[in-house]
Length: 269
Image (tube, rainbow, N blue to C red; front, side, top):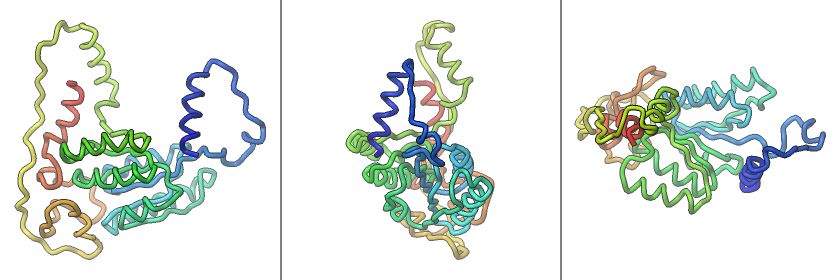
């Protein structure tokens, strides 16, 4: 079904100038056959809140499940999805599954695509698992945590015939597009060198151990990184409204090189 939808979209693009007529029974259906993309969300922190809101308001998809190792954030996301569909029953039933382990979400056969907004060190593993499960992926930048992961992802996308998009705020902003077009069309002359400034790389994590409130699966949060004691700088509890500083430490992020650097180097290229 997914393959036919992809082929259909390509054909429609090629034949867009020709009349296209669907039977009246199709238009009359409450939900067009194969029209809604089943969405799953992995990582429900601050960044994911904006992403979730955008996908909820896109009637091309239906959010079916959320996943986070923090009970508070997981429950908040679950309730927001249920509340949205309660207020918009025409877009879907007020149901949403919530998981601690992303593997349970990926085991569902009604998920067509996933949105990943975890800390950087947890981008690649669920991404590869989703691609191999036949799901398309939207993943926040930086796409991977290291070069080896990048190579594995580049292999997995064509091998599994899936679509992968990485989110980059600046790439989607009009002023950066205009600036790039001005430069590429020679408006400011010949470019000999491009300099980017964005800050230092990640440093080894040396944060002291803190007592942790119940409700966080710390083993799962650390995941593929070296195990270390809990510290609230890495994963603040509650519904905080800031971007945590786990990215300052090389075990979990890449410092400002992988934060603003992912933006500025992309624009420079």
